Amino acid sequence: MSITYDILKELWETELNYKGTRVNIFGIPISKKHKKGSFSASVNRLKNNSLIKKDESGWFITTEGKQFLKNNKRFKNFTSPFPDKSPKNLLIIFDVPQDRRAERDWLRWQLRKFGYLMIQRSVWVGPSPLPLEFKKYIQDIKLKDCIKTFKLEKGYIFNH
Image (cartoon, rainbow, N blue to C red):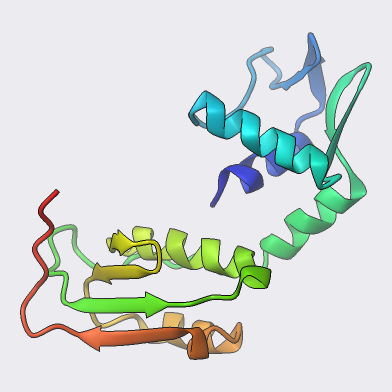
Protein backbone atom coordinates (compact mmCIF):
# COMPACT_ATOMS: atom_id res chain seq x y z
CA MET A 1 0.00 0.00 0.00
CA SER A 2 2.49 2.62 1.16
CA ILE A 3 5.99 2.71 2.58
CA THR A 4 4.54 3.66 5.99
CA TYR A 5 2.30 0.60 5.93
CA ASP A 6 5.19 -1.63 4.80
CA ILE A 7 7.51 -0.43 7.58
CA LEU A 8 4.91 -0.81 10.33
CA LYS A 9 3.78 -4.22 9.07
CA GLU A 10 7.37 -5.41 8.88
CA LEU A 11 8.16 -4.27 12.44
CA TRP A 12 5.00 -5.92 13.74
CA GLU A 13 5.61 -9.26 12.03
CA THR A 14 9.39 -9.55 12.45
CA GLU A 15 10.75 -11.07 15.63
CA LEU A 16 14.50 -11.40 15.02
CA ASN A 17 17.26 -8.76 15.22
CA TYR A 18 20.73 -8.49 13.77
CA LYS A 19 22.84 -5.42 14.60
CA GLY A 20 19.74 -3.44 15.58
CA THR A 21 17.68 -4.29 12.48
CA ARG A 22 14.81 -6.75 12.48
CA VAL A 23 15.45 -9.60 10.03
CA ASN A 24 13.78 -12.73 8.71
CA ILE A 25 14.80 -16.21 9.85
CA PHE A 26 17.76 -16.12 7.42
CA GLY A 27 19.11 -12.88 8.90
CA ILE A 28 18.12 -10.87 5.82
CA PRO A 29 16.36 -7.52 6.38
CA ILE A 30 12.91 -7.72 4.86
CA SER A 31 11.84 -4.60 3.05
CA LYS A 32 10.53 -3.75 -0.38
CA LYS A 33 12.85 -1.78 -2.61
CA HIS A 34 12.32 1.87 -1.73
CA LYS A 35 14.62 4.81 -2.33
CA LYS A 36 16.96 5.35 0.62
CA GLY A 37 15.75 8.94 1.12
CA SER A 38 12.09 7.88 1.12
CA PHE A 39 12.79 5.11 3.60
CA SER A 40 14.78 7.38 5.95
CA ALA A 41 12.16 10.14 5.81
CA SER A 42 9.38 7.63 6.51
CA VAL A 43 11.25 6.11 9.46
CA ASN A 44 11.81 9.60 10.91
CA ARG A 45 8.13 10.48 10.44
CA LEU A 46 7.05 7.20 12.08
CA LYS A 47 9.41 7.87 15.01
CA ASN A 48 8.22 11.48 15.39
CA ASN A 49 4.60 10.30 15.39
CA SER A 50 5.43 7.69 18.10
CA LEU A 51 4.48 4.80 15.80
CA ILE A 52 7.92 3.17 16.16
CA LYS A 53 10.72 3.35 18.74
CA LYS A 54 14.27 2.13 19.07
CA ASP A 55 15.88 0.55 22.11
CA GLU A 56 19.07 -1.45 22.69
CA SER A 57 17.66 -4.45 20.79
CA GLY A 58 16.60 -2.42 17.72
CA TRP A 59 13.49 -0.88 16.22
CA PHE A 60 10.01 -1.99 17.26
CA ILE A 61 6.43 -0.98 16.63
CA THR A 62 4.58 0.85 19.42
CA THR A 63 0.99 0.33 20.56
CA GLU A 64 0.08 3.44 18.54
CA GLY A 65 1.78 1.93 15.49
CA LYS A 66 -0.17 -1.31 15.85
CA GLN A 67 -3.40 0.69 16.11
CA PHE A 68 -2.47 2.67 12.98
CA LEU A 69 -1.81 -0.58 11.12
CA LYS A 70 -5.10 -2.12 12.27
CA ASN A 71 -7.01 0.98 11.15
CA ASN A 72 -5.39 0.93 7.72
CA LYS A 73 -6.13 -2.76 7.17
CA ARG A 74 -9.80 -1.93 6.88
CA PHE A 75 -9.48 -0.98 3.23
CA LYS A 76 -10.55 -3.52 0.66
CA ASN A 77 -8.21 -4.73 -2.02
CA PHE A 78 -9.88 -4.93 -5.44
CA THR A 79 -8.55 -6.99 -8.33
CA SER A 80 -8.44 -5.14 -11.63
CA PRO A 81 -11.11 -6.30 -14.08
CA PHE A 82 -9.35 -4.45 -16.92
CA PRO A 83 -6.98 -5.97 -19.50
CA ASP A 84 -3.54 -4.30 -19.66
CA LYS A 85 -4.20 -2.36 -22.88
CA SER A 86 -7.69 -1.11 -21.95
CA PRO A 87 -8.50 2.36 -23.35
CA LYS A 88 -8.08 5.17 -20.82
CA ASN A 89 -11.51 6.76 -21.21
CA LEU A 90 -12.55 7.76 -17.68
CA LEU A 91 -11.23 10.86 -15.94
CA ILE A 92 -11.30 10.83 -12.13
CA ILE A 93 -10.78 13.99 -10.11
CA PHE A 94 -10.76 13.78 -6.33
CA ASP A 95 -10.26 16.05 -3.36
CA VAL A 96 -9.91 13.93 -0.22
CA PRO A 97 -9.32 16.06 2.92
CA GLN A 98 -5.90 15.93 4.63
CA ASP A 99 -7.36 14.31 7.75
CA ARG A 100 -8.37 11.34 5.55
CA ARG A 101 -4.88 10.77 4.18
CA ALA A 102 -5.08 6.99 4.58
CA GLU A 103 -8.19 6.87 2.37
CA ARG A 104 -6.53 9.15 -0.20
CA ASP A 105 -3.40 6.98 -0.29
CA TRP A 106 -5.55 3.83 -0.63
CA LEU A 107 -7.53 5.41 -3.50
CA ARG A 108 -4.35 6.30 -5.40
CA TRP A 109 -2.97 2.78 -4.82
CA GLN A 110 -6.21 1.19 -6.01
CA LEU A 111 -6.40 3.39 -9.11
CA ARG A 112 -2.83 2.36 -10.04
CA LYS A 113 -3.89 -1.25 -9.61
CA PHE A 114 -6.80 -0.66 -12.02
CA GLY A 115 -4.32 0.63 -14.63
CA TYR A 116 -5.00 4.34 -14.11
CA LEU A 117 -2.37 6.96 -14.89
CA MET A 118 -1.79 10.04 -12.77
CA ILE A 119 -2.05 13.29 -14.71
CA GLN A 120 -1.76 15.40 -11.54
CA ARG A 121 -1.81 14.32 -7.87
CA SER A 122 -5.61 14.13 -7.76
CA VAL A 123 -6.42 13.82 -11.47
CA TRP A 124 -6.25 10.31 -12.94
CA VAL A 125 -7.31 8.69 -16.20
CA GLY A 126 -8.00 5.03 -16.82
CA PRO A 127 -10.37 2.37 -18.08
CA SER A 128 -14.09 2.29 -17.48
CA PRO A 129 -16.51 1.47 -16.13
CA LEU A 130 -15.34 1.22 -12.53
CA PRO A 131 -16.49 -2.05 -10.93
CA LEU A 132 -19.85 -1.76 -9.13
CA GLU A 133 -18.41 -3.31 -5.96
CA PHE A 134 -15.64 -0.66 -5.95
CA LYS A 135 -18.17 2.17 -6.42
CA LYS A 136 -20.30 0.81 -3.58
CA TYR A 137 -17.23 0.56 -1.35
CA ILE A 138 -16.30 4.19 -2.17
CA GLN A 139 -19.78 5.12 -0.95
CA ASP A 140 -19.46 2.92 2.18
CA ILE A 141 -16.20 4.61 3.25
CA LYS A 142 -17.75 8.02 2.55
CA LEU A 143 -15.48 9.07 -0.31
CA LYS A 144 -18.25 9.42 -2.92
CA ASP A 145 -18.65 13.17 -2.37
CA CYS A 146 -14.88 13.66 -2.76
CA ILE A 147 -14.71 12.07 -6.23
CA LYS A 148 -15.95 13.23 -9.64
CA THR A 149 -15.79 11.09 -12.78
CA PHE A 150 -16.02 12.16 -16.40
CA LYS A 151 -16.42 9.81 -19.36
CA LEU A 152 -14.06 10.84 -22.19
CA GLU A 153 -15.28 10.78 -25.79
CA LYS A 154 -11.97 9.28 -26.95
CA GLY A 155 -9.37 7.30 -25.04
CA TYR A 156 -6.61 9.36 -23.44
CA ILE A 157 -3.17 8.96 -25.00
CA PHE A 158 -0.37 9.35 -22.47
CA ASN A 159 2.70 11.06 -23.94
CA HIS A 160 5.47 10.85 -21.39
